[in-house]
Amino acid sequence: MGIRTGLGELRGDGRGWTLLAIAVGWVFILGGRFLVPAVLPQVKAAFDASDFEVGVAITVIWAAYALMQSPGGLLIDRFGERRLLAGSLLLTAASILVLGTAPVFLAFLVGSCVFGLASGLYGPARGTALSRTFPENDGTAIGITLAAGAVGSAALPFLAGALVGTYSWRLIVGGLLPPLALAGLLVWLTVPETANGAAQVSPGRLVRDVTNAIRNRGIVIATAGVTLIMFAYQGLTAFLVTYLVAIKEFDQTTAAAVLSLFFIGGAISQIVSGTLSDRFGDRPVLVGVAALNVPLLVALPFLEGVIPIAALSLLLGTRNGVMPVSNAYTIAVLPDRVTGATWGVLRTGFFLLGAAGSTVVGAMADADLFDESFFVLAALTAAAALIYAFLPDRATSRGG
Image 1 (cartoon, helix red, strand yellow):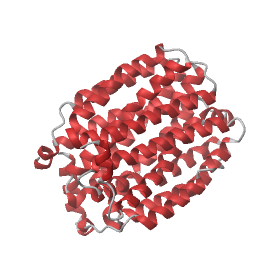
Image 2 (image 1 turned 90 degrees about the vertical axis):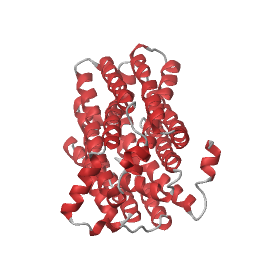
Image 3 (image 1 turned 90 degrees about the horizontal axis):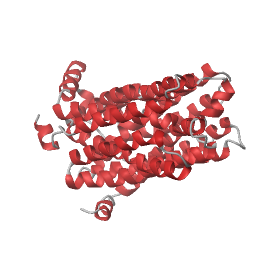
């Protein structure tokens, strides 16, 4: 099945509108989370904060996002995806007011937490809604949606970097509110209601079923690999702009453009990886993408000049191709009766652990070990590639 054929099979019975609405929402949910790192130099100046402190702020966003995954998964099984997706978008729009009007750094941390919690409701429902709507092409559908988010992650930080010299970072952050609200309305109008009998399961039975699902060998391997990938991803994306400004002496607009290239590469990789996994299987794609990124991370401190680093950033974006494949694999092998609950628990685990990546890189930067931090991220990515080599196929995992 080629890419064009895979895309064509996603239309029909209103499914194209469902895919469009979920993808548009993800553009602003994910793009908004990467807009904040693009204005970190201004945030640091406004609050007289250190690299470590602003690294903690980014960790707070992602940690709060992670903590909401388990409740979000349980709420899917209780209320369905449409309510969760639309509610997340509207609550995230409201949280922008808290984040953008923070008078002191502590309030900015609170705003970061609220933003992470509100946006955290979106991820679990996004994955299960797409998996249920496109059971035969889940890798392609999830890849397209994550690619849309990558485009948002490229465009919004780039615009922020271009505008921050003219407009306040607070106004730039506040500009997310209208599109988030409109995306919430679009989701409500186009995503169908879903019903799930899992809400009737007793709490004790639910805990046992979720625990048994998590112990599945395929789930353990997939989750361990994606946790390492997420840790490196958080550390890289949170501080790439700051690193290029402070160490490579780029101006901020150029540095933000280089970060945008990372997400453009990610968008391409997510579509291609999702489609390839539907055709050739999950394991070879996951191993290949992770292995490719090891030498790229090692090379970053040694390169000089805008063009070589811009090209490297585009290639580094290929690491984003791990997510649609890993997400589709995990959702597909989970038991139907506890898909939402288990998926939420897993997402809490790997996002919470991965969120520490920005704090670790920030601490190493303060210790004058900015270059060395990328070697650490490369080692973790290499470990993920090795772990993925042992991933069983979907049929084996379902049987296990």
